[in-house]
Image (cartoon, rainbow, N blue to C red; front, top):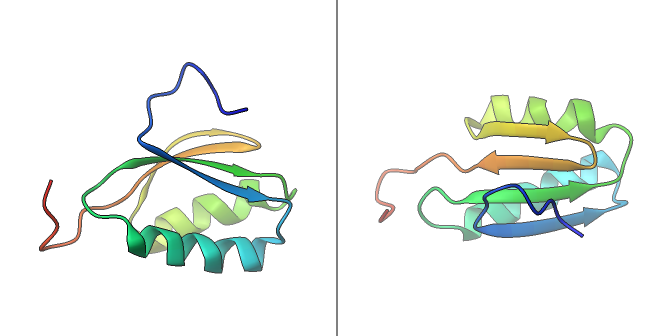
Length: 83
């Protein structure tokens, strides 16, 4: 289901959620993660190709690969996180 040739630590399946819901849920999910893991996100909504990169830019998380419907994001390290 997820790309076999990508290196990632965890996955997040956004399914066909609208982008506004997806972005809110993605933010909540990222808050549960410690360190700076690589997250493979699956998002079927046609607007994800615009909204996910914009969300990464605005939050400081790194968008490593964008191949709709998959996005590889590395969470930015927060001060106090153990890596």
